[in-house]
Length: 275
Image 1 (tube, rainbow, N blue to C red):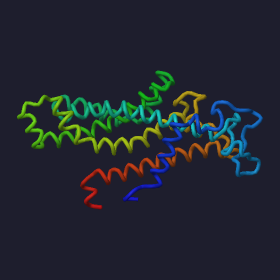
Image 2: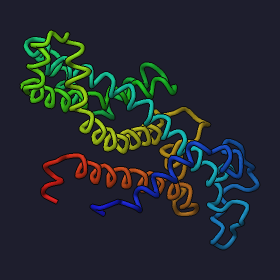
Image 3: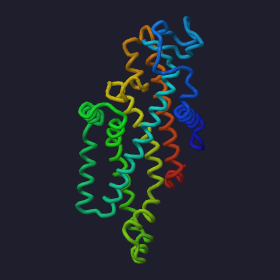
Image 4: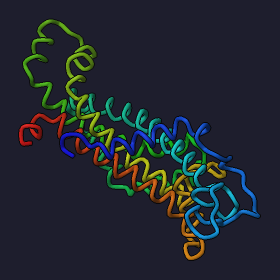
């Protein structure tokens, strides 16, 4: 596993491919069902059919198609959230670490305040106040993840700005933006890659939790969290409604965390020497 996490990488490749090619892979429309075919078990159980390999939900919708399209929702939400959250966090971390003083104090106190507020509670309040939509969910999740990027980037900048190459750039007359983005920013890219990889799992869990609580992507759009919620009262008679999307969440997040740990070991020279 330290050499190459083949199983997590394979699971992530399937997850990404499924999200991208969902319309081509899904055997049925994930939002349409038939009440005559509701609560059908998976194909390998008695009463199941190969028409619905993972069974159907309480509205007769194909579980396999909904899990496939749920991967697309999780992938899009995670990607957009990381782009927005990373952009805010990197800009804040660079400014705090480079300028220091009152700018650093204000930005880091904002980070401390955000980290002190329970993420789920803040997300629920914002979603209930602003309404449910894709952009609102992305904004809420970006607010949840940017402080970690800001704090880590700030720590890296505090170290890098004391290096000789930064002093030489100042002597050569390089402007502050040039120093930040040409000389310092490349030094934090490895940290950003590892942190982004680990944060994807957190974002997927947060989105799934919000959907489970009814504050995520609005129905009838298939989302893994809302699918788990749909089956929580039917576990005794239709266990597959909650189990299938729950397994998808677990495998995706676990694989992403294992891949992130491996990537951290590969990109961090200190850990690489210890290995």
